[in-house]
Length: 579
Ligand SMILES: [Zn+2]
Image (cartoon, rainbow, N blue to C red; front, top):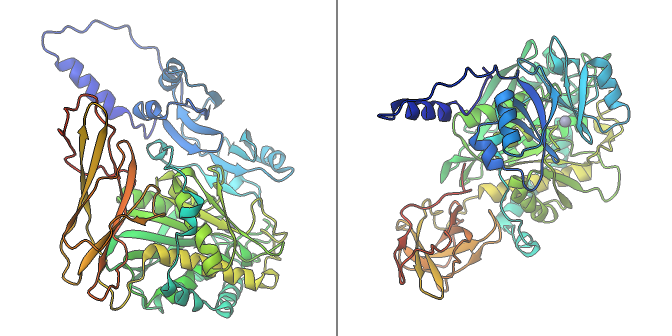
């Protein structure tokens, strides 16, 4: 038996159906040949790769990269893939019980040093899978190489092709809030520097040391002093140790269950001879952690529609163990994490003007689009969007594995900081102006997402529902999306917004504010996918924030539809709004 196989309920259901079919004698089958043992396989990504078929069959895919999927497959799985025309290569024939580690191998000599420490197979340019025949493979990875512990569950349920890319015009118009200009103006460059210095002064924050745990306690105290709604530790095991993530929350007033996260890792590392005593980790990653603390400070007293969590992860350098535990627990609890802003190395500039690289997978591209818009406004800093699922060596990656939208913001990748993972990664090497601009841009984006509630404006509409009618004639099919919402005492009217891209590019589709509590959009195109949001307009014309945006997909015209009506959606089709 392989662990964590997801197909068994299907197999069980099929078995029950077969055995209960009345009057049917099942033919005796020859005893099945014992299935080949569990293997690690590489499946190249091709345009024709049948993701849906792989998902139906419950293939245990553990990692998506730019060029391939890495999966665990026994003999039955391999036979199924051959029958389905899925090409694959076996990388390790004895995968049962193995702890694999993904290792970044871009630097010259990286693969050779990895092969000297255990077994390593290059799976694409810059990435190898590493394992050892006994012991903790993550701990055996040579110092200085970025690594990711093998995800514990299949990521296949969360793989999707991603929504359409937003147009440049939609991105350009995406952020525009003067209230947020005032919030980011409160970010203090001297505070950022002081917070980096404080973290650096722990000597080392290498996870497994008491210094790292003391740094966690200092972060806890810093969050606790800000008057947030909740601050707590979350412990997790790694190797033969435990460490703690520090989690602080400011609960949203309109959508308390919908969460945006800004995060960083607070642990550090340096060469193996020094890391237990001397690993200042100023850029990597006191810089991101200082920005997360400043975010909490400037937002602590701002009422927000959405819940924001400020999270400092530990044991990132060991293989992303803190974020791996956190993201899996969030998925297990069904948490509606709408977006994750992971800041990792945002203080070093090797060129002027330095820009900020924002790495996303396809499904998270909208988050990077918003950062591209937020960077120049709130930094100012140029944010560059890069869609590349192979960039997995930081705390955003476990969120991707669990189907949450996330990005990593980093000054340069491949890395350009010559002090990276050395005892010379200190505050003195950081570019304070660039660092502060990155922090302001990140907090500006976070505030755009979480929506500050403005005094004197109507409340943010909390509910918006939709269904659709479709009318077919011989020549054409028309769709009408019917939007409805509860009346709100502080509203004199409502505006309805629509976009074809997730979370940005909204265009108002009504003329004068709507005075009732419903609106029919008869310009939707059958087969289209639309995001709608609602605002309330007060008696003096002040407008509320937008309601939570959800996707409604208008089904394509049915050829069987009778002329002049007949198709009606019973429930809204929620596709990508919240997962
Ligand atoms: Zn880092």
